[in-house]
Length: 424
Image (cartoon, rainbow, N blue to C red):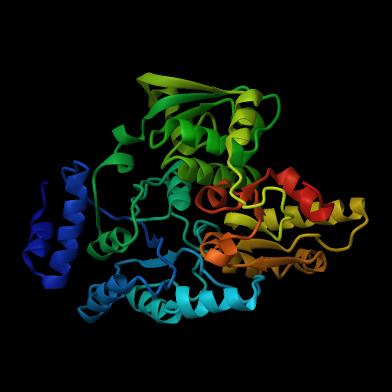
């Protein structure tokens, strides 16, 4: 790898032994992927994936202590993924003990380390850091050092920023030295599409289901999607961005997509059109039957497949302000039609703390609470990692949560029926 004089000096120890080791880690990471050089991080903020104070992460705490002691802190303030626990989310006494005494017993300590390393503020815990309310929305073309698959794919695709699918810890190391290796999705060639996906459905495809289908088909490749603008339009308004948030999260978790292009809609596709498509690109046609096939392929991980759901999670990734408002209307109308006053299944809508704060300023918040729905900043995935919670029959419309846990997937419409009217 070619290094500038400044980069080589850091590697040689000009800023101390710890910074030299951090630089060496970044260089080795780049060499593994064939990077020929390092390029500067240009965004104002970073985003880290590791937000949970698991007792088992002793080496991470030791590493962070060393970084803090030697002044090797992030050159950017950063947000971080959601907190793993929220006292307002339903759990029994034993589950609570496992959460706070066994699994996440180092949470307060770890959050103290994050503050010392450069955490934006106490509320900067969300997987949807790009929400306007959070304040970590990069500009088009900016080079990032993010981790968190759903945030990375959104930044690349919807915002037109440049970032690879980084892992935990390498995200903070790149931010400390201020450089990322030049390979993959930060290069022009790496952003070209090797798949053309043709949408031929008779109605607007479910975002999570469509993302799942594409992710499982193209895996880590870049798809160029044709026909979706018919259903989303050609403007990145709130509705389109919300759809792409959930769609992208499914492509990234059910596959390993870090970037997609939507014809006539996403920034790169609007600017470059079919020039983004490689000559040997494969074609994947998605119609109603294909989406049904994908839906039917999902395994049910519950011990009793006919069990009555005990909990419903919505918001993985975190919901937007518009989603919270829209779902308030949906839940109210569903309950009214069924003659019920409150949801029939304990239901948790998750969102970023900053989004929740804005939501609470609206009349929607009291209305949703009256329906019996809990609004939380929690990470549903971290909740489900509790072995006792993992045994519960939990339902969700998140394909990310379905993929990583035992939660059972239903479409948004099916979820609404279950929580307001009952039945499977």
